[in-house]
Image (cartoon, rainbow, N blue to C red):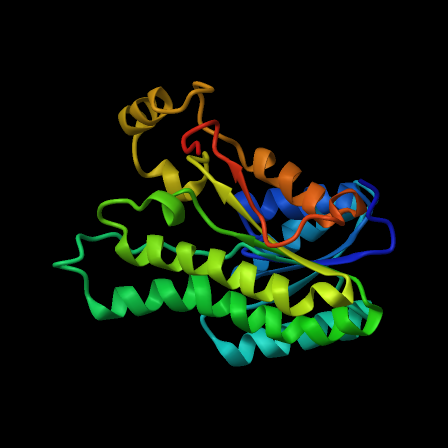
Length: 247
């Protein structure tokens, strides 16, 4: 899965899955544009990539802000000359039962998790079309496939990502650009850390492989879909969930 000569942009790269994806893509040879809100964490990430012999640059971006998305991606293309691989990973939760959910929390999750992906794709597509090669990888969730009580906004945003993935796949396939999604199950990140050990142990019992996933599990799948080895895969949802969802 050699990515030498490729340029990847990863959103939500300051921690968790995005952080692991950036490190893995750099290790496979890609130059990586890392984007998130936390400049300090981005700087630490780019330093870590450089220390291991890779190439990276940081581009502060709040994906809830359309102007910031456009400006950051424009800067990334100017810096690296192109973007070959887009990993739409940034996401948030604002959990509440739907009968009590505030409209602001619905809008925040849909804007961050779904609308931002559309905006990022729209911004990088011209670069991919120009070189007639591209990989769009959207990080969705098992809960976008099976739902989750108290997460109507999150589940809707992640289900929407799956539909977006397939629509884009049909639009750009003739230009040698693939569009795929990865649906993680229960992954050990800061987003799930607040749930407590009892919840994690209970969740692990529902997973056939008997353990929660790691960010590196997702990063490995991203690296595969970004590579030439996955050139005949598009419009696909790759489940990386330890067997939580089958069928």
